[in-house]
Image (tube, rainbow, N blue to C red; front, side, top):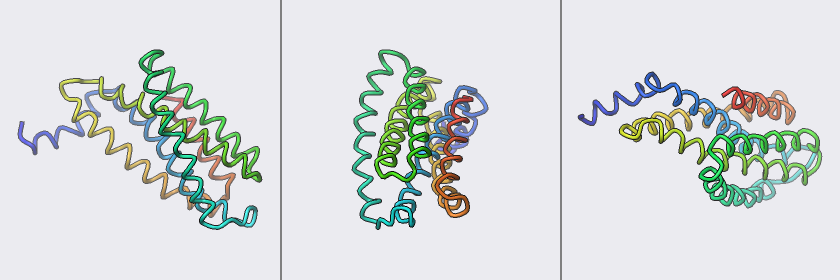
Length: 189
């Protein structure tokens, strides 16, 4: 196939493979959730509730190291227990993270716990989800994965764009409500 024909065939991957639509919807929802929470973390600590500056918000990035470790653990667990079990477990951690954000929204410790759980969730579920996407059609894995990543990052970017708007209009509780909605979408998949 020519390069142009290959590029034209990438969107057809969604029409051909229902599993790709399923995996992309779930992965995109939790990446939008993940992106949205990190963007609003630059805003929430600066509110009157906490009054912290950008240095504190930036220091939350250190917590992101847990995600790197969790992706390695999730990869091994996926091989041993299956991708579905890892994704379910990761999304359960997302629920705990959202719960921490809601219940302990006036506590820096609760915020850190929620961030940690959300980071482990995304970096734990993503490798298992990607492995399933790559296995859909080994002969066309590059096209399938291209279709997956374009949608995945597009929806993640939309999540990062929408979250500050939600924060401005509805505050931290609104962001947590949006997280719950994205988490619900993941569970429907």
